[in-house]
Image (cartoon, rainbow, N blue to C red; front, top):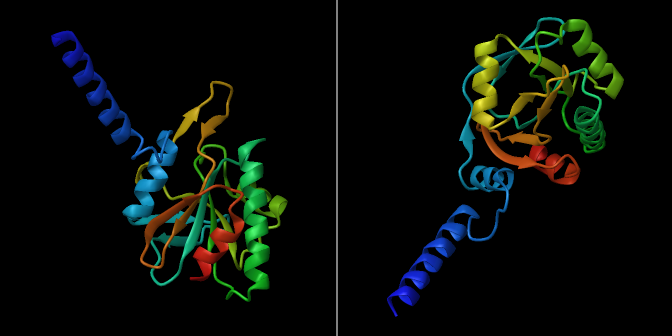
Length: 197
């Protein structure tokens, strides 16, 4: 009888832990849990200065304007191409919706060692970025890069072959300067709606 009670207690404790770890069965990966947490409790961004290829500063967070951030490195042959394609589609939808010409799309390079002004410019041109809406930028220094990646929960790991393994997501910053949602690259309509709100 004691064995049965102990086994039942262990089973119930395990089930409770499983439910807690999966957000009540809503999240089976750490990425899904991160996204649910952000939607429940938007995260404030630390003050960060980003620079475009011409050296012009863009301060984060911005007030009064929603923005969408993606994290890339310009030599990336896979995920970053997908992210750039999503931004191109979002840029087109913003133009069709008559969005004002202010930068709302930021491709943020996390590889400042290799992504100088020429590389940033080429990445933007290669994806059809209109600087009126979409800028390709790099944080001003390594400290600000780390602060931004940490604040948004972006994981960047060297792959041992000169590239990186990293999250492929769109990060919606609301008008109050908070990370309000993390979207898949395919969620173009939801991204546009968030920017136009």
